[in-house]
Length: 397
Image (cartoon, rainbow, N blue to C red; front, side, top):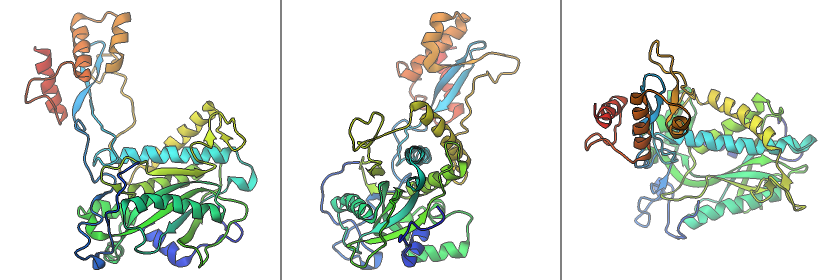
């Protein structure tokens, strides 16, 4: 949307801050942070125990090269790289953020599809607790609920909440302005500051993204927490409305790039409330207070359009995937087709390839299942060259 929803207004000071900043865990009251200049003996490594996407551990097999398929004609092995999909993984977090943003965009756009008139409106806001009020893991998570309660009191009907533990320091913002990079502040911090925790400070706040109401209430001085309306999003453009999808997806993708959570936490980064809550926006609405999702067929089309947008937008921080499925054998004049390793068993029940090709298919399948492994020293190849050397050992030829 390009305008305010009635009395809903943006607080200029917090709008500037938002532009700059733009899972269950143990119930603990251990202090987790404060501004660097306020740290004393009481705070020990305060916010460094909170994880940023891509700044944690990878899965045990992540990055390992494994069989992906075998050519049904020449028996050439096709390879793939194992991906753990963890949000903490330096290699996989891009894919996690992209997929999470696609799912969130699909949910909001599916909701907007079923609404009429002003009910299609959606927007973005920030809820911030008073400085120093959130000082424990329990308070950090409970802050989502409190932010949601404030959003509902302002007129939001259904929305997502994304928690951010940090804000960038003034030093970071100043250097960012001096450098003038072509990317946003947080993308620049991630790319140029390996010691990113030295450039942020503990300042939890909660982003609200979703459907607004007919009569929205503005921020009030009497509010316990600071409520800041940021902007209305692009008007809903239908199932194939690229601009609308781009706006919602880009917002979620950006916010997910620098969300955070206590080390080892498993809570979802995106939590839904109101009419978009998981128990309310459902496939089969049997209660008066529930809302039914569009059909599977329509959702499939919607997701395809959003995924196309996600592919176009993933240029600033590529996850290294082209998205193209390899089906034809790349060997010159072969003319064969790559049989996916997971389809090998079914393929061999129906086809009779040459004996050497059949052998290679079975070995590739067994290797991928973990039933056989290359000899010691070649078990977990980290490059394609190492994987092909391991393959020779597996074949025993």
